Length: 88
Image (cartoon, rainbow, N blue to C red; front, side, top):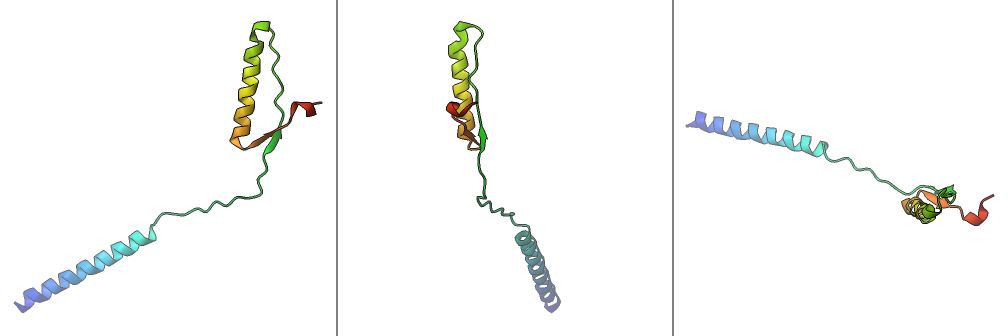
């Protein structure tokens, strides 16, 4: 009985050691954390010239294309639109 008991205690001890190592390995391979803090970013100034339609029927389409382009660029936050009055 003593030999069986000592084997049981040894097996339990071995299991505890293995579980401890597995726990340490899991703790060390945790998720990486990347902290993104705002820097000194300034949007790029950009001019979007109006499109000139060659066909009078497409004037409205050309205006819509410019409006969508401007809205998309401004909404991205990466660009600041230069007003048309500042165009040379």
